[in-house]
Image 1: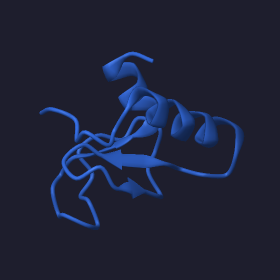
Image 2: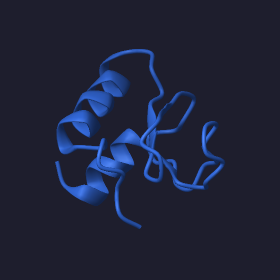
Image 3: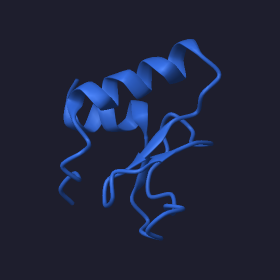
Image 4: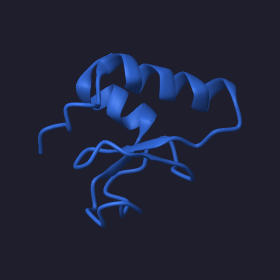
Length: 68
């Protein structure tokens, strides 16, 4: 699956850093680009609260997958 155009490497990096150094548990939907909370760093295929696609991935997992 391709990333939604709003999901940039900079955005993935920002969310991953927020998860590492804060109390956030960020994830991003690859289908619609919406941020999701409550995701494990290595989350894959969680259901998106906005579009119902099973395309929410943890920010750190996206960083690994798409190179940051």
